[in-house]
Image (cartoon, rainbow, N blue to C red; front, side, top):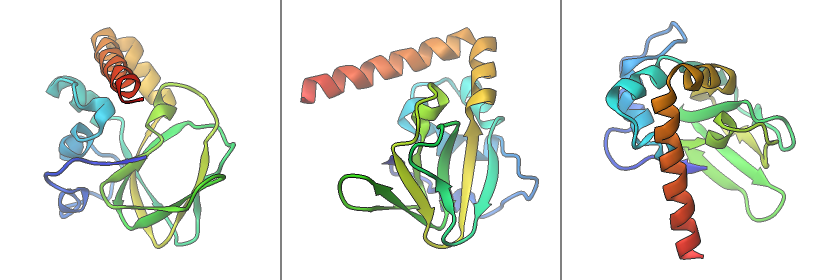
Length: 159
């Protein structure tokens, strides 16, 4: 669970939403700020953005539950949510923050509950759609592997 880098905020991008539930190039800036996608070419980022949909969650709704299969990645576009992990304090996520990016790559269960504190609008990408994209775009898969390897090396160096 992380926050997007400085720059145009998700809320600013939301200023001219479309109600179709599908998103595309309007969300390139938002997705480019996600570390997993940070090294992707503009063409590949457009392909990832074409998979995105929006979803609304009412206040108090569980967005994900600990132990459930992780099958969707989320970026909070508007509203806030609370992450409740078994250990540690609850954390608040607000517009521009994201969670579940590893769900795009594996089927591990969720490690925490995430509950909408107020109405939440989220950009979502499903693992099944993302997996199909990776099969059709091997160079995108290679770029993600390089990014993950770099993140692993950085984590090992700081440990």
